[in-house]
Amino acid sequence: MLRVAVPNKGSLADDSIAILKEAGYRQRSDSRDLVLVDSENEVEFYYLRPRDIAIYVGSGELEAGITGRDLLIDSSAEAVELLSLNFGGSTFRFAGPANGAYKLSDISGKRVATAYPGLVAHHLKNLNITADVVRLDGAVESSVRLGVADLIADVVSTGNTLRQAGLEVFGEPILTSEAIVIARKGFEIRTELEILIRRLQGVVTARKYVLLDYDIPKDCVDKACAITPGLESPTISPLQKPDWVAVRAMVPRKDTNRVMDELWLVGARGILVTDIHACRL
Image (tube, rainbow, N blue to C red):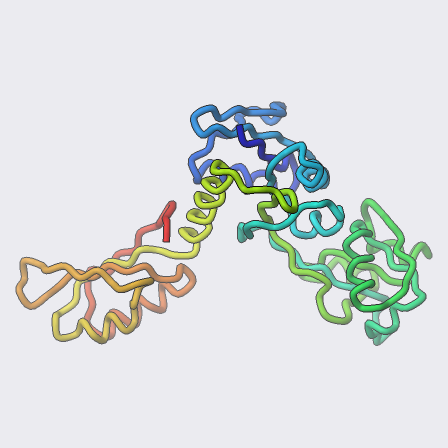
């Protein structure tokens, strides 16, 4: 059986279980369960700490896992990214005392506090910057005020927490992270893993698109199809009304309302939007 690690808690856990369910895999109903066997799909799911998943996969104990890109890099495990899952997004930035007008070159020789020492050390090495990386498990933004560090490297969303601590970001982002599927480096991908990746990719793609159906006069079809070209080509079907046709096409979810507005202006009516739960493209 294919052995796959799934986050057992934290920000990635619920979304990881949700996408696996959408991909047709059984998942645990009791958060205390450590292992679940999906015999129908020949997969064993192991529920582990997100920080440990890359280690288990990299060591070869498990064939694949879902974790964060940040956690993979931080672990330095012998594992590689196979697929991004488009959830659990976060951005890592450097921050220092407000009004310090820091630049990346100012990091040299400083103490940088972070909960991701491997990730930060890797990034600093790529920048050819030498600094003292201070590992902390939490409350990184307090480290400068308490004299433990000169600068920090942490996840930044709105920046409100940093501003309350008297800090501000500087330089380009260290990393943009999200949930990913990983496998051991150099591992020969088995059929079960290929199927898992294909199913998850189908869900990721389906979440980005919707199906749009509408009726349109035949003499307006070209204008409408220019608005909804679909992935290959829109599907056009005749209606009982001889001078009208029905059109179906996939459109990006984020563009749905704008596309509906544009279709209405060129004469489309009966415009319907349907969610896509999975697909193979």
